[in-house]
Structures are given as structure tokens and as C-alpha cells.
Length: 134
Image (cartoon, rainbow, N blue to C red; front, side, top):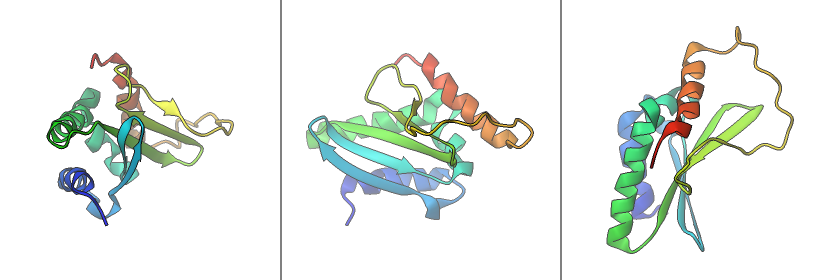
């Protein structure tokens, strides 16, 4: 059974993406607050993040407003599962949002010719999140 915050994020993200059936929002409550983990189709990752992270930041702002109403602190983690060799997440825990490597495995260098333009663009947008002042 999903909660109102999960339904809220799921509704907004499904409106943005090309593969709405692939949208999954998981909820974990801990001492820091509520962590919502968003997983989308790899082709939709760029749409969810947006240029320079604007769309992701807007989602976090809406969650902050919902948190004010519900007296809760929300964090949104966007999972990048595009490449099985690498798994990065974007979290709003820190003002200096930047990709965090989750996989302890050794990362094999990507062959540029095998990577799609869309994947390159999404990776570039993830890297540009370092520049945001939040």
C-alpha cells in the first residue's frame, strides 16, 4: 500500500516520463526523515532530472511543501540504473548534491562508441548537478 507522498511523486513523475509503467517509488522512514527512492526507465532519467537538475530540484521543492504540511522531512533519491557496471544516485540530503557511487565493484571504463547519445547527455546532466547552489 502506497502512502500519499509516494502517490504524489509517482503521479508527477508518470506525467513527465515516456515509460510511466517503469516508475517505482520506494519509501523508507529513518531518523533523518522520509527517504523516497525514485527509479525510472533509463531513457527517462534525463527528463526526471531536467537541464542542470531543475526538474529534480522542483520535485524536491514540492516534497518540502508536502513535508511542511505533514510535519515531515522528505529526501528524494533518484536512482540511475542505466549501466549495470555503475550505479549512481542523486539525493537531496546535502546542499552539494552530487552523484554518489553505490557499487563497490571496479568500474570498467566505458567505450564511447558503445554509449548512446542519450546516455551521454544524462550522464552530463548528472555531472552538472555539482554546480547547483541549493
